[in-house]
Image 1 (cartoon, rainbow, N blue to C red):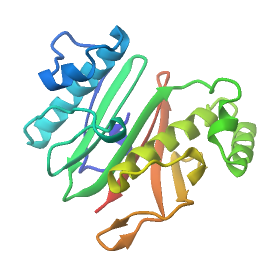
Image 2: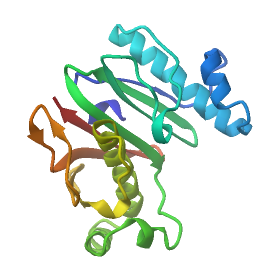
Image 3: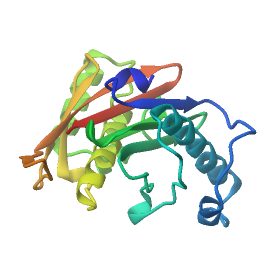
Image 4: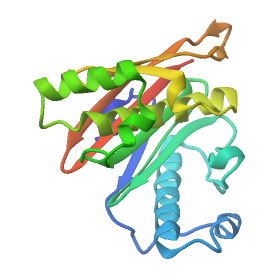
Length: 217
């Protein structure tokens, strides 16, 4: 599903379970030595996905050790993003000469817990979610908004190495499977071009939802 949301320059790999052949490099093991079993499984399998995707891209794998704010340290010349939720793990990678950054997120296709929307959404976004729910009540719009904001952050962070709060981007979701994000803080420069927002896509199916952003070079 995530692969269908991204351009051909992006290689994606997904897993719906934790295959026994998934393994970590020693440096990766050290990062989760004290983690609970669930966290270790997610961490291991999503890196197994990344290893496979990088191989398909023609890039040798190197340990994806969490760096600043936990972001994975991709090999030189590569941009990428990881995501995992219950029953799903995915990696998306591309050559940095093709794209400036990638952001992906996956979530269960369920409404957010009570009161979470008020935490993550701007007032205008909340109003738009209410309108969307009135027109398409079977779509978990609040969770799509949350996921899209996660993808925005993952696309933003490699370009800035700065935190981006939920309140610092105004997102508009469209029933056609697209969304836009308008940055409410100064955006990064990419090849002399000021990024003032992002465009992304979303999809729902088989109990999951996914969002994705690819930032052009």
